[in-house]
Image (cartoon, rainbow, N blue to C red; front, side):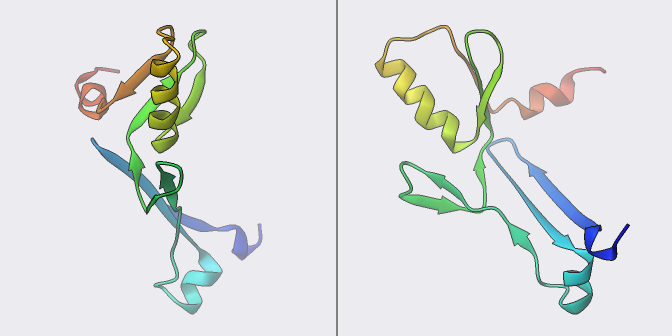
Length: 101
């Protein structure tokens, strides 16, 4: 496996907001502060952030549709269209913590 394939990733799964960052080994060895992170857009691109909302949306069949700010935009459309058969979850992190696996 080539050294450039190794990476370190960090996931911040928060109660309200979530994000991630990563660095490739070759990049880290040249500059430890060279870290890549996603830019999330909300509200038709008016807000750009390193984190997105910790919310998830499943369609009427229970299949994953989206995560983060995209969920909020889609759910707003669903409410306006009077569609109530989708599943919207937010601020669920601590509920997962309490669940025994």
